[in-house]
Length: 275
Image 1: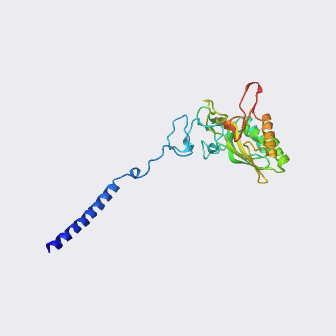
Image 2: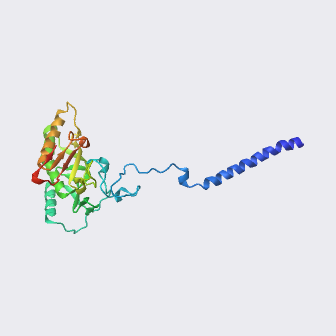
């Protein structure tokens, strides 16, 4: 009997010990915070960029201001610094030249909407911005471009007079969509402390051109035997020098290897940077 009791007792003790161990583990688990048991939170979200002005690391993009440390074109910056831009208040007055500019856009068949004034500090400002969604000939702008009216008018005119006719001549097709990589964006020129013309809504970057035929014309330097594509890109790039004060593209430098950059930067003596 004593031997049987001795054999039974250790088993009972082990069972009780197991129950106590499970209870202790449950208490320890409930005392941990969620952060303690999860992987550490990343320092910055993917797709966000640091700026000159101090910004809370996880602040929404729409709240980030200050010149961005980015190259002149970056498709990730197309919608920055705003994701949802408010329309201009009804009845808001504007200078005569702004009203005349908009009248010319309407006559050309450009689809746009007036936005509320943009002021992100420093040079990042457009007093009377517009958002262009399509151009003459029902050519879509993808995504819609936020610009000052003068830049929008210059680009719409270039598209109608240079791009569309060249596409019809070279490919027997109209232009369906212009895919832009950056319109208004509060940032500096790469490698400098100078505010980009993008920060004034005074510049636009074109990444590729989609034709009605379904063909895509990538602005990046075409291959050796892409004769029609090279001819088209050469013509529209050279033609842009009559509408803009800056025309840069592949071959100028590494930062412009995949897009055309157009702007209306004010310069003395009518100098045009066409490279």
